[in-house]
Image 1: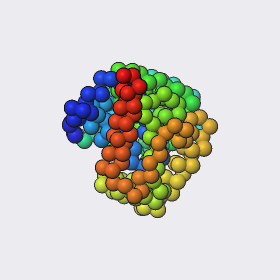
Image 2: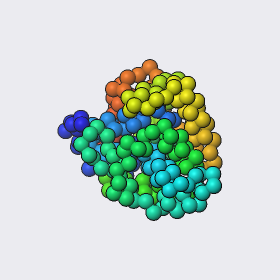
Image 3: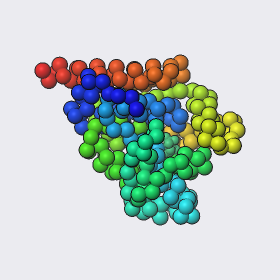
Image 4: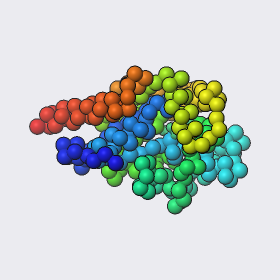
Length: 246
Ligand code: DC
């Protein structure tokens, strides 16, 4: 974990709610960037995609499918208790009803299922309520698809990350191979295009850049560059706010 500097840590108790909302399509680098920004600033990192994946995982385990059992899946989601815990490795684990969901929720099968699951209105209602509750206690960096548009339209800073479909599929492919999955690049690219199409065209909370979000194209940038850019934007906003309040 990267230590927050004194200057960065100073702001941690000044902001509550959603300090930074990071949205963007699958594998645009949201998780890595959000986690690093949260570490640097001493904020809490929340991966909302993990929550949709966890509902998909539990629904699949219960033998429910999104086409026929939308109502039952909505009810299931409303009963789940979500909690992010630090377990000592490089990523926070999402526990559902006390059960660690890692690494089960990272498989490509759960990833593909989470897209139709996330289009069920009752599922979104429950998860958005849980996300708002999580941010009510501490400043958070929250990443997903609808954070700046729906979950926290009043977020202090909104960032929208993009990258070409090929670059994103390459990142996802490498992640899955590193995890030991036997996948083909073309399959990963096709699944991702399908997921993007679904996430952008669903009627409820489609993936969309908020009008006041800053868009960053990550294709030509390293992760470190993107993190620096977000921290810079945040520091500028904090300075502007401090000056306005002085
Ligand atoms: O970011 P991810 O791949 O882990 O997200 C999994 C799925 O959840 C993805 O298909 C989109 C959906 N999702 C969503 O609809 N809203 C969010 N805030 C986060 C994820």
